[in-house]
Amino acid sequence: MRRLLLSLFILALLVGCSSEGASKSKSGGKKDGDSTLNVAYMAQPPTFDPHMTTAVATRDIMRNVFETLLSVDENNEVVPLLADSFEFSDNFRDVTFKLRKGVKFHNGQEMTADDVVASMNRWKTTNGQANAYLSKSEFVKEDDYTVVLHMDKPYTIIKYLLAMDSNFAGIMPKEVIENADKTGVKEYIGTGPFKFDEWKQDQFVKMSKNEEYQSSSETVDGLVGLREALVDDLVINFVSDSQTRMSGIQTGEYDVALAIPSDNVPQLENDPNVNVHIAPGGYTVLIFNKKKGLFTDLKARQAVNLAVEKEAVMLSAFTNDHFYTLEGGLLGEAFPSWKNDEGLKEYNAYDPEAAKKLLKEAGYNGEKIRLITTRDYEDQYQSAVVVQQYLEKIGVNVDLQVYDWPSLMELREDENNFDLQAFAFAPATNPINFYYLDSRDDYSGWSNSPEIDKYNDELKVAKTDEEASKAFASLQKATWEYLPAIKYGEYNRVTVARSNLEGFKWFNGPLFWNVEKK
Image (cartoon, rainbow, N blue to C red; front, side, top):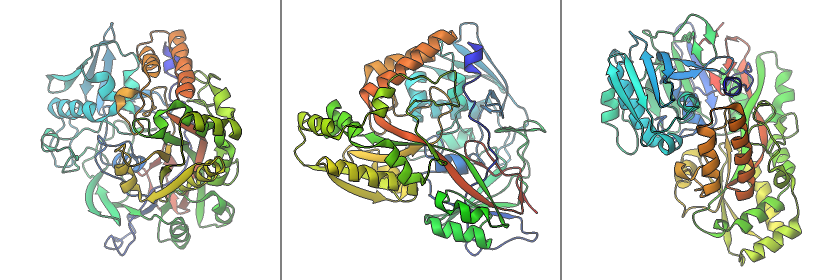
């Protein structure tokens, strides 16, 4: 299975930039030598605890503070980060992690197995996928620098879950874990290149250089290797208005600006003071509430799929096809070992008259349908507007409700708050990277398909390339038949950096280490 599994993370590493920095006035001004990296970011995360959310904003910000046992190198292969090594037992039921020695938390305490065990056993209860597959498994301490994961089943591709950087398994001091409550940890103490210093709600997060940081190697290598903080302070400013981010990057108020609208690219490419970076941003979806309301009925979900032209959604959100791809597969062209055509007949379907008939059969009587979204990510709002327009054409009474990002992330956890949600996910980098599919994940939208669960299980214990490919193709087919959500397409994000910055890279999000101002 080596060939197939080593190809899981082949999403191209693209040079880019992005993030957010608090304005100089709000963050206390620049230090001598202009050693503050100011970033304009589009949304405030719902929490800074990476164990608690899949939010991209939490990932982008907090991976500067927290690190994981495993991560990925520039070839997208799973490699150790805080671990020195990891090894599967012959029966794939145990994984032994040898920890790096001398790694210090931001409070000066050395990281040991006690901290890792506490962190990992908490994370496997808060991460939906981990809870689904590791609820009967346990991380245990063997000695101060050895941790063993004992699993009840031979999950052959568990390393990809452990290396995921969304809802990631950040390692924290044992005491921080013990003091956490259901809302999250109370202190943000990690091992990363930046320390968490200050958060002003709706304004900024300020981080500072970790002078005691130890890289896992001296070579820059994807999300591992050399990770130096080359500025004294990193400030992420929450700037929801895209034109404010745009003007701020042009004037030099910000060093990096994220999520710039694609129609601004021609203007920016003619500005010698900035560099434009275009990189894979994720995929656009419409998620159904399958626990309560109209869309518990498959026919109603099929009606929505038939009623909306997918290219219209992507074109409205991303301006032209330079910034999006019409792709209905769970994994697209970047993953030739996994890409398949199962279920794509449903992706390509558009039939408004058939949609009207299905709605009637589902018992729709003109009641208000709540479609929730945010303008903090403008593309999500634009996709929602198009969905609303198409659904109204077939007689659906759509109530479009717009929230800020943290409010949306809270509202979507309650089935009483919505019927549809216009949303987007970061790029999928492996075949288990789909939160909304498995019923045991309890993810917003609340899938409930025994068939999908079955193929997910087969995929996770597959022992050969052929078994894994077959299970994944069946999973994709079952997804389009059950319709937990509609994937409209994949998109690129536009990030802009000042031309005096060196070292910016994009690896499934912006990287702020190894970046300096000239």
